[in-house]
Length: 128
Image (tube, rainbow, N blue to C red):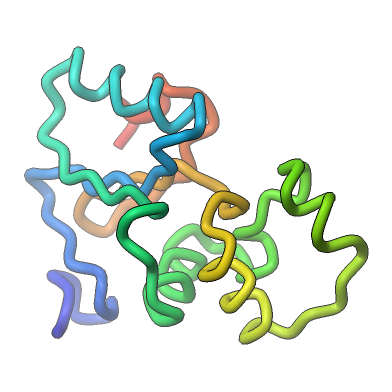
């Protein structure tokens, strides 16, 4: 399965729609979703707690954001701090950690066409 961009992988994107990867229990995720809906943005939602990401998808999201896989982990998240202190994992280990504990992945992540952003504040969604 190929995305809409020939150099991209398994994540399909469209210029006419925003794909939002978010955590439905996080305040930032809920606020971003509400902001997007309020502004009538065309949205495809992917709740990372209900739709587990594959290792390939996690890798591709990191590449699209221009960050490493360890940088995909929110090391300030209380579950990360409680379970993983000063771990030295390789990329494959980090992918497994994210898959087993999706709540510690930095999010929301918004994609539109070949543009990808990590949403820092809910209003960032309009930048894409």
